[in-house]
Amino acid sequence: MMSLKSSANLFQHDIAPAVPVCGIDEVGRGPLAGPVMAACVFIPEDKRALAFWSQITDSKKLSAKKRESLFDLIIDNSLYGIAEASAEEIDELNIHRATLLAMKRAFEKAEVAPELVLIDGKFCPEISCNAEAVIKGDSKHLEIAAASIIAKVTRDRLMAALHAEHPHYGWNRNAGYGTAEHRAGIELYGITDHHRKSFAPCSLYAA
Image 1: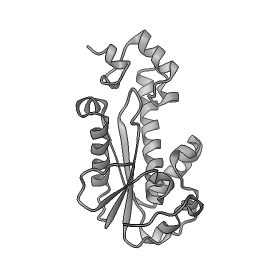
Image 2 (image 1 turned 120 degrees about the vertical axis):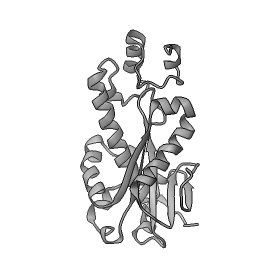
Image 3 (image 1 turned 30 degrees about the vertical axis):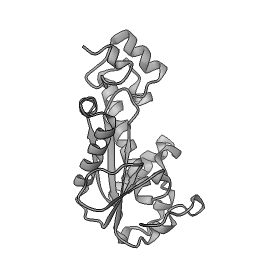
Image 4 (image 1 turned 60 degrees about the horizontal axis):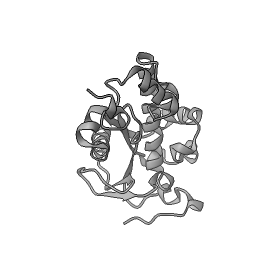
C-alpha cells in the first residue's frame, strides 16, 4: 500500500510515484437532478514536471473560473476518461451502485493499464486492476484531484445545458442540488426526466 503524505506535503509522493497510478473521483452524488459523473486521470511521466500541476487541488477548493482554466490543461496532458450514470440508473440501482458504475465506465474510457488505481472515498468499483480507496483522496493525490476537476467541470457544463431546456429550476446556478430555488421550481412545475425520482422531494411528484 502506498503511504499517504500529510496536507503540509500535498501531492509530494505523486511527483515520482513508485508504480504507475491513475486516480478516479466523482461528482454529483447529492443533487436532485442530473447524472452522477466520474473521471479517471493518468499522468504520463513526461508530463508530470509541467508547472500547472502545482495548481491542482480538490475541485471544491477552486473557483468555477479556476476549474475551467485548468480543465483543458488537464485533458491535454493526461490520459483520461469521463463517464456518467444517469438519473434513471441512479433510481434503478441506488446512488452508491450508480456511482461505482460511473467510476468503472470512466476507468474503461481512459484505456490505461496502471499498476494501481486510487479511488476517492471508501469504496472501489469492480475494475481490471488493483484499486485502493482513499478517504479525502482529492486532497491527497494529484491524479484524484485532477479527476475531481474534470468531472466537476463536465457535470456543471451539462447541467447548464439542461437548464436551457428546463429553465425553471436554476440548474445553471445550483447544478441540480436541492437549493430553495430548485425546490420551488419543483413545487411549481413538477419534475423532469432528469430528476431522480427516488430522491425526496422528487419522489412525491413521480407518477
